[in-house]
Image: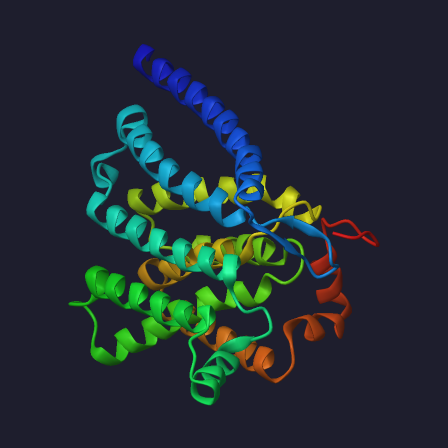
Length: 299
């Protein structure tokens, strides 16, 4: 009994310290992004820090390891949940760093006039030059393919690997497509998480990866919704990469199939028209999109 009380006290104290540290990093990441020149006009023309990627990347990488140690040393779960797959966590952290670096480059020097997969491919073949967007497509596809082969390459057929690869890549780009209005990408991610969480094949590794990310997005969302900072490509790509990881490694096949169809439809809409136009045409989507934000004010 005394040991259980001691663990509870340690856990509560650790959670309180973690909350303070992450909120402090939230403020510091905005300042650091501004000093590094990572400021950009949003859709209203207001210049704000592009700090979401920096906040999520650095915070998540540190949080993953801290949460893993906390769970194993303080919580000490049952034998079935006794270990974190640290080799998988390490591989994922390396892949997340690659995704962040490519997205950061696109945020810093990317061509804002070229949009969509078709646009970047057209520039390559018509103007014979690489855009940072095309580099992002290649780099993230390579990161996904390598990680996919490491995690489940021997367990799936070539066809299944192709489907999972497409699901993961479209998930990354899907959250990037959503990140054109305040809070849209974050709300999309948290909403998606609520839908898939009940169907996940849970293990301790997944807890260590998801719990800190959910917390970080919850404390980030007020900044995004109030139009004081934005995720940018680096942030949207990171959270898309993590959602893709969850869908590919921990969801049942029927849910993977449904999510793949949804992303294909959304990408088709984005290429033919725009997701924002679709949202504006449906009142319930518009209200959901505006929920939590500041109305009739510049971002």
